[in-house]
Structure formats: structure tokens, C-alpha cells
Image (cartoon, rainbow, N blue to C red):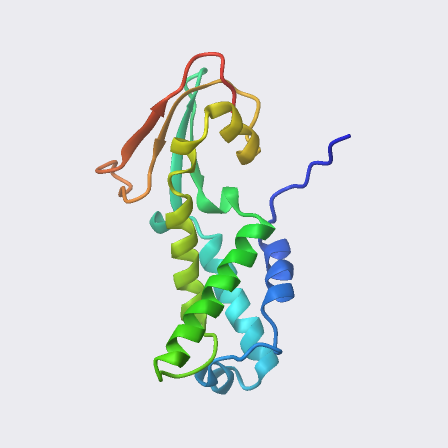
Length: 176
């Protein structure tokens, strides 16, 4: 028996972040001062982080998939979010805060630490379609159904279509 777990939406992502980012962790003093309390600081940091993670701005564009019927779909990093990714983002932010404290800089986790961790997580995952076969990738992405004829990354490409790179050509018969 298999149980399919959907990818977290923004509301679910907030709940997952709150499991890993809470007032028991050392927060940047400026975050607490700005928000008024540790609880408000955590809520503010989580809200900003989730908004950034789930935005559909150019920085979050990931792939363009062309289906056999000719339709194209633009996918964003948010389309691949998971609880594990969220945990990794918080873990990366903690490491950044620790390194900063060791270097004698201001202590505590900040919103900027989490935003930087999102970018690091995305950079680490940008070659995912290039390192897995299309069937595995379709299973990972949860985008099964229509046959894929072409996939290309949009990371680093502007909306006018300059830049970017081809990931791979997909053989007919493979599905996304």
C-alpha cells in the first residue's frame, strides 16, 4: 500500500516551519526588537520566508516543461517544496547564525538567514532534472499524466527567454 502525501501549500509550509523555527532557538535581537516579542519575531520570520519561498517571481522560476500536446508549463521551486526542504532551510539558517556568532558578529537567527538558506537550497536542487531520469523525476515532482517531450531549466533566465539552458531531451513515451 502506498500513501501519497501532497506537497505543502503556503499554509502547510507555515505549520512545518513552526515545528523547526520557534522561540526556543536564539533569534537575532534586531528581529525581536522590530517585532516586539520573540513570538511575533518567529511569526514575522516565518511569514516572510514562506512568502519568498512560494513567490512566482523570476528568482523562483525553475523549469519549463513541454508536453506532447504542445502545451508548456512553467514550474517554480515552490512546486517542489517538501517538509524535508523546509527542515533543510531552517538547518542551513541555524548553521549560518552559528558561523556568524563564532566570527564575533551579532548572534541569533534572522529573516535574512532563512532567505539566504532558501537560495542555497534552490541552488543545490537546480540540477535535479539533470541528475535523474525523467520517469524518476516525474515521480519526484508529482507531475505525472501527460507525456513530456522537452524540459529546460529557467534558473538564471529572464522572462524574455534570454539565458537558461537545456536540461535534456526526453524520449517519447515518458510521462510527467
